[in-house]
Image (cartoon, rainbow over all chains, first blue to last red; front, side, top):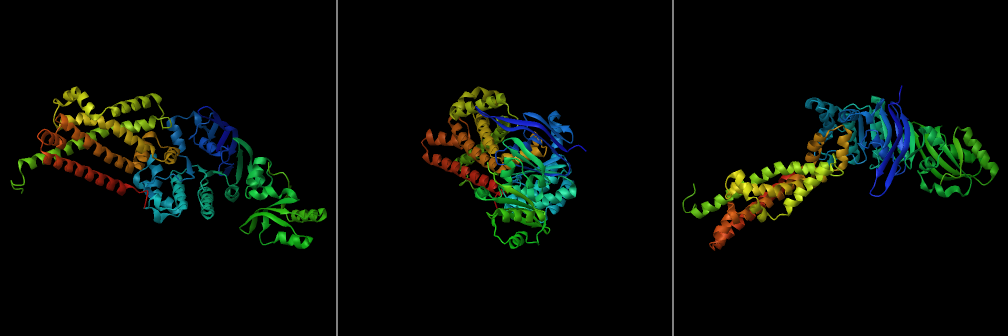
Amino acid sequence: MEPIIQIRNVTKTFLGKDNQVEALKGISLDIEQGDIYGIIGMSGAGKSTLVRCLNFLEKPTSGTVLIENKDLSALSGKELRQTRTEIAMIFQHFNLLMQRTVLDNVCFPMEIVGRKRADARKRAKELLEIVGLSEKAKSYPAQLSGGQKQRVAIARALANNPKILLCDEATSALDPTTTKSILKLLQQINKDYGITIVIITHEMSVVQEICSHVAIIDGGELAEHGTVEEVFTSPQTAAAKKLVFMVNPQAARMQSKRCVRIVFSENSSFEPVIANMVLECKAPVNILLADTKDINGIAHGQMILQLPEDEKTAAKMIHYLKERKLTVEEVESYVE
Amino acid sequence: MWSDTIMTPMVRLVLEGVAETLYMTLASTLIAYLLGLPMGIALVITAKDGLRPNKVIYKVLDIIVNIVRSVPFLILLILVIPLTRAIVGKIYGSTATIVPLVLAAAPFIARMVESSLMEVDRGVIEAAQSMGAGLWDIIWKVMLAEARTSLIVGATIVLGTVLGYSAMAGIVGGGGLGDIAIQYGYYRYQADIMWVTVILLVLLVQVMQFAGIRLSKKMDKRVR
């Protein structure tokens, strides 16, 4: 089957007063039906421009975007609006209609496509149930918390049964706990309705949490892409390394001695791997960075350890870790 | 019913003045909105970062609005006398005054509407676009609906301004309270009549202002 989204050599140049900014410099990417695809990059990397090219809120300067094999640039105004009803979008600042109730906000996209009012209200109520906000139907957005607003935005996005959901920094204005619950909801939607989700973010933790694939955008170019596991376990480019390690910016200072980065992906979180290693090798290690979490009894995440100076002990430790199916790599030059 | 002692000819005159002033103010504001609202919308839509940028239309509207706005009302009143005669058939009285009032208020309203609509969050408009909303849906359901409290406050200001203009028209026999103030207070040195009309004008503005602000607050769902 053809990928649901095909991005081909897309460039976007913004004309300033006396300069021009190349926001995108020829990006090609395929996104398959049912993926949760993370697009990550530092701010100013061009990721928001890229996602806006996927529904033509921004028209690419050159290149093509194919949605279900339809070339967006070949569509008439009316056809484009029709296609947009199949590509929903949620935003960092929610962008709800502040003068409408929650229920009427969810009805809004259905009004646009001319759905009957009674029908729309019924569907809106179902959607609010899905996002867990039934009791807020008559409230106004100003009365809701950030997380609740994003839930309303998600309900609104689902109203016309889209095939694709674009999320532009959808969790960047939320606290970590709320972020988690919103990501869970997105994951559920992906699973239940098979909606392809594209997530724009600057946080690796968001990608790690729910994405199946990730693309790293750096300076308007596609630096690296693949499954999250591939990219996270062995980042190839400097941009990717920077983002993977961004979890802790202090990581930059640890290079003086021999360091290894270990990635947990299939270990039982019940096994105290590092502690056992220390006991076995009878030498201490310095944990410089630890960012792991327990997902369904399996440890996920990464650590950076400073190993003892002694070559032999260090080698033994690396061997010990590798034996336990951990990905181990020596880190030296992951900072530009 | 009112006895003749209260309903003296002078009181009757002043009450008629109030009625005429209200008639001129409300009628010309209403007609001026029919012209100014579309102009204001067009200014926002055709602006450089609007939904349908169009340099020519924007520039033409912008210049018309600026020219009319820069002519003092009293001059405009006299300038448009031929037009008033052509439309109404006479050049004095409250109905005749509606013509210059509309001409003066429409560009003012266009600017008020423009600034109200510019306040609407671009993100919300973008969200509507991402849902496939067309231009008219965005104008009606997003821009005008979201800006409604600001539009009402604007209308309140317009009413006050038009009321003031209508009083000014008294100098050329425009009818209403302003006319009475000039006829009796100025030409006949009856200062008491002048004071009564001034106080009534102030009261009218106060009532309009109060009602307008109250209404806009009630319709604003952004804060609670």
